[in-house]
Image (cartoon, rainbow, N blue to C red; front, side, top):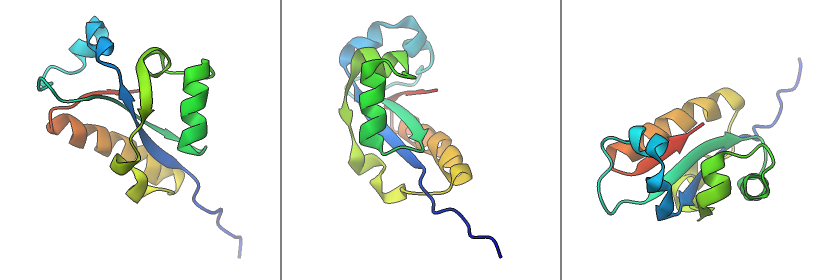
Length: 110
């Protein structure tokens, strides 16, 4: 019987600086944003979230919003879910983004 690989995928959430709201593209993606709520990026990775964040900031396979406006990771929003299998992480990335938007956060997802 083949061994299943150990789940090693992660969802992660990055706090984005307020300047991201100056982007028309970001504003269009968040029509229900509630004033005063944080701006976030939700992603998934096969790496440790700290390493992935560092790669974004260094411009390596980076999301522009994280590279330019990323402040720090917000582990309290994602640690309970990690690690997981690829398909679960892919689905959780979407579900987490939807849940955060429903709370009025400004959210970007790749």
